[in-house]
Length: 333
Ligand code: EPU
Image (tube, rainbow, N blue to C red):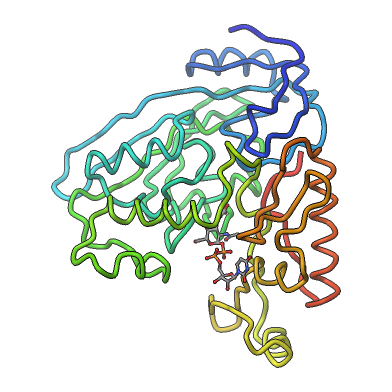
């Protein structure tokens, strides 16, 4: 293990922001991770760098988690348990599962990031969240160096949320995640409008067909971080109560919405942002994506501060216009 000094982070974050790590070390095994944690506990964890906006240099020791490997435990008839190490690229893992005909993750194709960070915000898209196939994860407790197993019920998964964003924030390092996947796919999910329309001519869509449809939809709406820096949805879709919704609907009869529960209504933040005129707007190298207003982009050399101040302007405008507080989904560093 070699601790390097002053490493540029541009290629380690999907926003493509140029800041530096004062000290940086690549971790390639559990042994290395345990060793480094005994030396230093106040560390900065870097996985795929897909859900962060870097606004400053990083003073803490940056641990770049590179643990790789996939293990299959195939002892049951219809299901299979697949464990992936934290440093596996999420989409490559999904594609590998599909190639083995293991179902359950196909709707989550093409999400940037690594396996190890997927449970932290319970990644989700097109009607599926990882909590739906999550079996357990193993994580290293930073304070003690001990490994703990977290089952589904320990993770407190919610919409873009988990225990690792709340009371256990910065306390554990996830080292692997096990998914319970299907070998016979009785419950494929094509409920999401855009998927069902793409698949309407397929009689019995396979998990590969679903993955291909998701990839096509994502590619048509979301910018490829290799081409334009971004972190996917920058904000969460706000959930408001029934009264607030009725007031808004009177003023904006066309407002899109999803009923979450009797008194909870989710509004697509992309719609709110678009209504405020931000869609496709560019301020220097910081901008709002042309095809999906929920995604902020770095056209090349925007600083994290510039993206952050654009985000704050958007939040203010949404508050003034709709009286809705838009929460940022991405971690601001
Ligand atoms: N809309 C607009 N203008 C826009 C964008 C969206 O009016 O510029 C409205 C449209 O009415 C559209 C609706 O919002 O029908 C929903 O849009 P979309 O299907 O793109 O989904 P979303 O709610 O904007 C969420 C996730 C995405 C995920 C998609 C599909 C959040 C914060 N985002 O976006 O997740 O891919 O659903 O399931 O929940 C991510 O987290 O990085 C991400 C991309």
